[in-house]
Length: 141
Image (cartoon, rainbow, N blue to C red):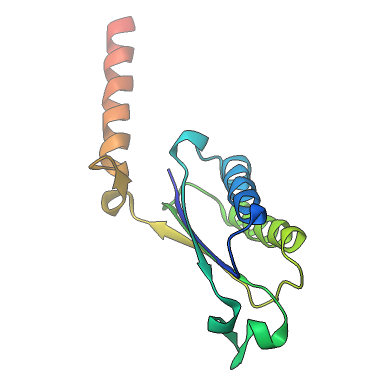
């Protein structure tokens, strides 16, 4: 059930929708997240308003992205997260010309008690699932 905030330099284009599709697919595939619960907020930042080392991307004639994904803590390993970060950068580099290497991706591991959707925390959902499993095991015994 991750929420992803994706900022891309430049104007909206067909590549923007492709970026969202690629990021969503990688999130499902590499992090094992339910595709039906992945949400993405996309924002475009003009290249003359995005600076790296004091120079605008417009002046550098480069592009960049910033991705911030929030997931429930302890649901992915270090190796899974490392593979995800690499795959995200590779996918974006394939879509956007002259991608600046200072394009960031940030995985936020949020505590299950402090993160959720639909008004319910992930911890509550976990506890409910545990109780249902216990009840089902008791009934079948």
